[in-house]
Length: 410
Image 1 (cartoon, rainbow, N blue to C red):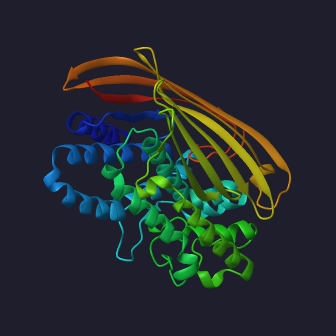
Image 2: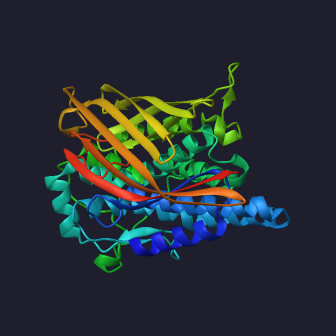
Image 3: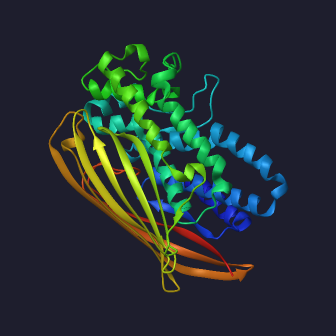
């Protein structure tokens, strides 16, 4: 599957890329088949390629494409990246699984191929990853949109070209969260299907709530609203209300950034999602020093478990061109989280994470635009803890590599 993604990306790069921006193709992210970040990046970059070309060169069909983009995102691309989030957790744990992102006759896109015995063992031996298996689809949705926010804030992407993708994903994610308020009869129950053809978790939020409140409870895959107790229902309603935070985002309404008096640019966004021990709220800030082409993204994050609050933060340097041949991306994260990622613990555990990526220009040519290819290599390291989109909850060191395609006007 990785080779298929890479082929599609490179084909799109040669055919569609005309916008001044950076496009990334992450060939490897650790040793596993495909990480959450890889899946999100390939889908997002392919979406941007196609959209940018159509809006640049084919204004007559742009309206038709916009409608197509709304529909294709809703029925395929968002389910694809959402389910890849679930699948990636299992892959990181060396558990085989298959992503089936097409809605079936019951309206369910799913991940299949995992036995009850395997899931039961995961719950009993590694509860944080079992909870993350439930929440990883929404984690993937959150990190996809967060990545797009940065590109918009740093003028690497025109909003009108990805408007359909951004709006559809916000509505899709918001609608899912709100099922705890307005669609409580929603039920995903595939117990009559062969075991290996069943969705791994059913309703993400209700399953998460039941299992995080009752880690020693009886194992079963699918949780109905009627099976939640009063406290669990109250918790899922809290999640639904907090999810409105995701709409506090200027780029969602076509405002990519704000121009300061000195000519530089600033923006912000808020985000909300779920974690292996509860949930979190992130405040992202984007500062673009236009003259020096410095793009930085500091953030503050608040993690919550059942009764406690934990603070986190970090900063990222985004696509910094050093000289003529180097492209630098680096980030640093620091956090406090509950000890052992426990839902009820008030004990705090401090963690650190860092990543450095260096792209070296390997080829460039000029034909209407200045086109450059970079070979990117990187290293990331973290202590035990949860970082959205980071594959492992444990102490981790991994290498990555890929290609970056840069296009700019002559």
